[in-house]
Image 1 (tube, rainbow, N blue to C red):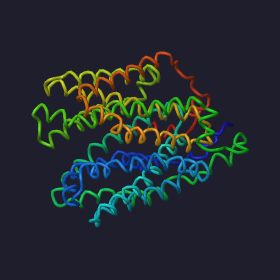
Image 2: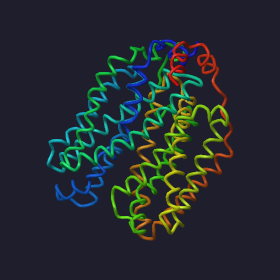
Image 3: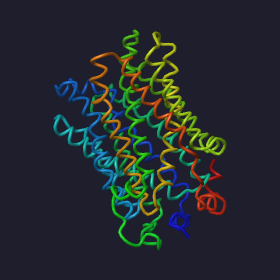
Image 4: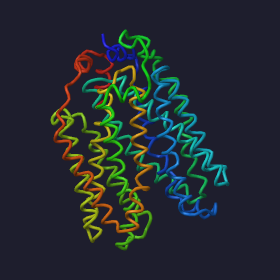
Length: 420
């Protein structure tokens, strides 16, 4: 029996409690910066800092995630997901919640880095746990649910923060404290699975770290490169949409937030809820081409639209693309790496995803300032068009035999299927 099969069989006692905790944990990655975005201007004024310093409060956790994730991945491969995930949730809650009592910019900045360390563990471990517990068609269904949960969190948390921000700029930081009860729930619900490296004869000998994984499995490197490129290019829309709407006469910050969040999250959630059916009918590669095509169309429309009406389609198109690409790349990276290095592979995704987010403003910010938003969007569209052309050279990967067998025979898979 392969490592994948052994791992899944060994965790067949995981039930609805595990799935619920893992889906809730999956919502936390997007709230790192989004939660305090509605009050960032108030924070800037209260702490008497400039726009760059205030922006770093939103993005510094992404840098911490990108740097720390490979270490978290190795720990996950060595010790399993349960303890690192629980610890990460506690660190996440404490690092984020510290903003409730902080009145100093340097201390607040340091707390955001701590938040990023916890978020790295939450993202990597929750992803590895979902991929390890579910296989075959059931895994596609669960990964679609994960996308829906993540995008729902990206909608709900900022709105809650906006409401709390009416009381004080400290209040939204209380939302991060959700990590503390989730950490306790993780210890109670997740199975005490033994790391695959101790169970499978295929894992004897040195496993190496991230560099060795990328060297021995170049497809993982290519997929992570796709994470970096797509995330970096699509951040142009996330950063520039409020400014573009302001140019078109839309100044109400609530309207701007709803414009970008509701439409994008709604589209991504609908894709997530139907993701298993879409993959069964069209396959991963066709869906990836559709996703990148939607992104390219959204960027071009964003560049040329001169009225707020057509711009309504932009967040819908980006939401469709994100709803497809998030679960697809996650599943394909998992398939491309050995089961005993699942944690390391998922940590590389986190490094690529959040590294692309952090680096995008550094690349496109000067370009847009020197030219225009339209120019920056067209340059990004050229990049996504190049990705689309490359995807036409990619063929559909074969389904691992373990996936097919476990999707039919695993009693845990049947239990999850009953929840659909």
